[in-house]
Image 1: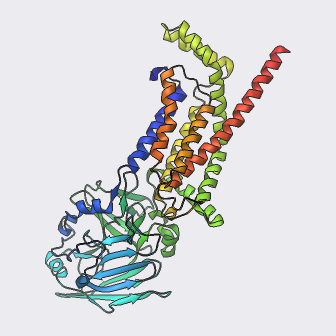
Image 2 (image 1 turned 135 degrees about the vertical axis):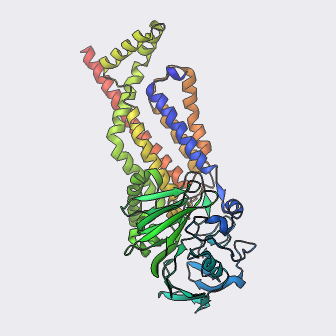
Image 3 (image 1 turned 90 degrees about the vertical axis):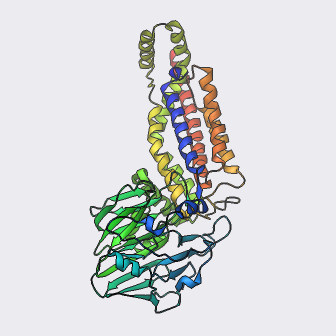
Amino acid sequence: MLDKMSPQNRLLLAVSLMILCLISYSYFQPQTQANENASLQTQSGVQANEAPQIAVQTTAAAAPTSTQSVNMDEVIAKIESPDFEIYIDKLGRISKYFLNGEDFKDENGERIQLIDDSLPPLPLEVRFKDKALNNEAFSKSYAADKKEITLGDESETLTLVQELSGVTLTKKITFTKERGYNAEISLSAPQEYFISTGFRPNVLADAYTFHGVIVKKSDGSLETIEDGDAKKTETFSKSPFAAASDRYYTTLLSNFDENLVVVVSPDKDKNPNIFIEGRENLKLTGYIGPKSKANIHAVDKRLDDVIEYGFFTWISKPIFSLLYFINSKIGNWGWSIVIITILIRLVLYPLTYRGMVSMNKLKDLAPKIKELQAKYKDDKQKLNLHVMDLYKKHGANPMGGCLPILIQIPIFFAIYRVLSNTVELKNAEWILWVKDLAVMDPYYILPIAMGLTMFLQQKMTPTAFTDPMQEKIMKFLPLIFTFFFLWFPAGLTLYWFVNNLFSISQQMYVNRHFKRLKEQEKEKAHS
């Protein structure tokens, strides 16, 4: 049957199935925090970092029974602000990091936790190369100069001191209300050590969004290592920053002035962990929180590359920048999606117009092609020659409808990545019933409307089917898409719905225009 399909129909079917498979795999293979914790907790701190240049830890703080609870016996300092709550454990590490506010709650209504002390390494964890010294460091508690800090508009500094054999380790950590912090690590005597960004935030994982580490290299390019792909220890010299990220959140360390030596070490499951090679006096800027443009830029605008979209970043970033700009003017992410969808379709209009005209011509030629297929059914060579002559005579291009589809594939996936990875869409309202563009439409109105417009668009679009079976397959696509889009984020469904509406209006115009052209041709033929 497929060998009888026109090139456009074959391509359309292939693209539709590819899109369905990819985005369905992404959203129907989710891993929640609890599921990931179950597997990650099986690896101890010793297993997490076995690179020869990084000494393993021998003792870790006791993990609480609940990820939401805090073992205060292990806590030496607490930092609070309206936006977050941080706990520092006896080993001088950020052992718990909670996000405050209605925008950052999980499905159970509890605060989102970005750092969990059951998932080492933890942010600001120090590991010495000397194993004996490292063992001692993981058995002696730090002393904190403050037990509690409440952040206002002014930054506050916490000083942590650990007395070890022959060396004193001091951490001065200055916290700001923007979720960023500055850390100064100093040693009283030279020792080789490493400090961690912490294991990536572990809130929600799905199959297609990025989870792993990003390292900015000395030449300005990015090195991304996804979970499961860290096969060996890698070292990056003169790196401005390194970040461990999941879909929406990140924990990072940076120094754009002096740059860093970053070591990415795999654990037993080939998940990457970041360590910064220490020096006698090391200055770092850190950040833990959502990968929102405003929050990242509040720490340092040069950290913009932390917001990463994978292979389609080169298209996704400009699209997001435009989307962000539009939202800054109108203040509604839903209407911003509507506007950017229309803008993209306007840019592609000349190309899609030619494709639609070509498909109209092919539709008119379909009966003649069927006659040729019946006449030369036993001689494919002659059939192809006569079909090509027919196309040439009437100025029809069999591949004319394919190019617009091919051009839109990377744009669609770029927008898909933007709408899937943009944390700003969490709890972002559009109209009436759509209160959160980052989750599914609770009443299924958008996906059903999307399916209806897809069906209407299909009815209006000229086709050149020569086989009843292929026509039936194509007719089922709107129903299949509707079914899968029931669970997709409302923002993505809104994009597809508006895209369909624009396609319908464009197809109506082309159909009317083509009808007028044919009427003019008939008038000329009669005159």
